[in-house]
Length: 460
Image 1 (cartoon, rainbow, N blue to C red):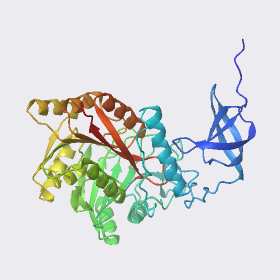
Image 2: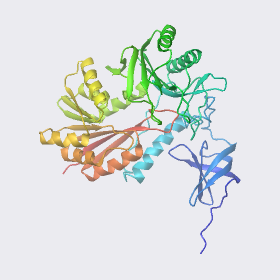
Image 3: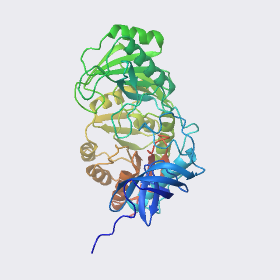
């Protein structure tokens, strides 16, 4: 019996009505039950779509013309939005972005975690969902006239989209990138060429302390020598006196990884400073520090609320990084133990604790799934465990360690709803009950969403 053929063909132009959104923000429409995924389509819209890829059970299309627009469609303020791969949702009203992200979390809770009974709250959004990022790392290329250009990569390519501004970046970041690019061009510093693995300047990274005004510039080169280094420093700091640190990072490898292993401070301090709430943080070139401090405060406030600390608790913070969550917890707990696999991050966490005169937080280097069983053998019994893992979620051995330690409460901070739902299912099966999930919009105009989740130990 012949296999049924899809009802559309490649390169065919069709009229499609969008019914839904994927978690990436693409419109979904169906032809005789066959789904087509189309970037920039919005539910309720009728549009002309060109079919660009046909698979057995679904296909992909390109939006040609919208015939009936959704009320949620807005004009993207960014001139290069449709070329650049940095944002995915600028064509969508902010209220629709938030409802899409809530739907994404509800969907994985139901389909992956089988936790449809758990309340998912409306996401905590921003009053002004622009200009929020305190860190930019942008590749450098060359125009035909030899001038340097900076910009993010075009979608699914390594072609640099020449841009002067990025509307989700803090304005000082934009100004500093423009200044460094102009000064480097005038000094004759070459851009790195990916294909030939020649040239000098690969990336410009700028970090800003949004509360302090501190600025750090990181210049990433293929070469060990930074040409015209003294002149470059002189001109940057003359133009921008609040630059506290200029760092030279050497990345000799043929790689997509931005920073290399060798890092040298060539002007000013190793650290800049910023504050979240009452806590002050030292930030180095390689520190992991949340890029949206405004929403990080909202995220941590919710994590603290869920931890429900009364002053006598022992808390473990797995994946503690430079101590951001740990130090907030330490203000309300009796004792906090942080664990992190990156040695430099642990050094920074200890420095941040001293900087804030916090003496009830201890930090250890290692894998949480190895350190926590050792702590258990030493008699450590946490009342609360807080986890904030990378996108891949918690290691299975870590989840097992958490269950064996039997804290009264677990607070799970997540940057990936799918792995969160998977891990919650394991914790539920191990004797915990998920109480509620609070999404937080850390990255407006993109399809990413963070969540804070509260679990209690079930009565036995």
